Image 1 (tube, rainbow, N blue to C red):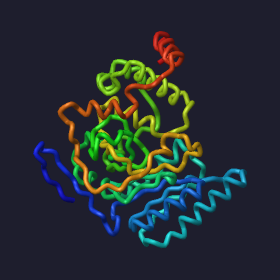
Image 2 (image 1 turned 120 degrees about the horizontal axis):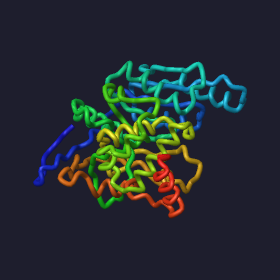
Image 3 (image 1 turned 180 degrees about the horizontal axis):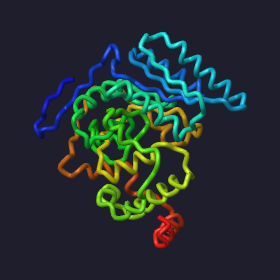
Image 4 (image 1 turned 180 degrees about the vertical axis):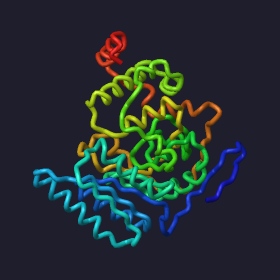
Length: 313
């Protein structure tokens, strides 16, 4: 890593084009062999050395799922580009709400810091150097929860990083002591209404109602995902997620070609200015993330208001 200060005292970081990627990498997967083949092709090309793989189990009767599940397991067993491969095969099907965080739990029992990718997230080579540098740089700052590889900002921002309170889970990195915060269940949603950090990090009133409604639905079992508890923890405790303005992850898991994530291509980056707009708390970057100013329909806003006044959220 090489850092210099420019005239504005901004730290410019140069990414190293490593011949081998040493930082531990966890892959979360289940039954998508075609996706995993593509991911493995890139990991082999980049010479990623320390591979950890966690596959959710399956003992059901669906023959198609069983076939795909076995194909994934065979691909894992045939990894030949590195000898450092550790495997975690769950015996039972835990589902997409439990298996991923259980896999991350397993990962951080073995490593102190590392990178997490799912089988449909295809990283650039720059992503690994980016994570490696920033994992070391922010090792002691417990207020930083994660390093993100995906981006949503327009190119007018140039190559910068900034801090947001909203985590992105499409290719990311963190530390064991940060992951230890993870909670499987959602609690104390009612307290969010008056939480100072929640109000500060989500200043738009309807956006706050959106999150309150989403968290309530998650608590009631309507959403089978695993990352909403991370979102709640970050925005209510003012935890930082370091994000780039340049995208380093392609997501191939969305079948709809019109999905916004399908349009974001991964980039190779040589240099970037790190945390350049501290003076205004990255205000403009957060607006352009697209999560503070939601484009919610009038009908949906009205339904959120009704829920709010009835204290359903």
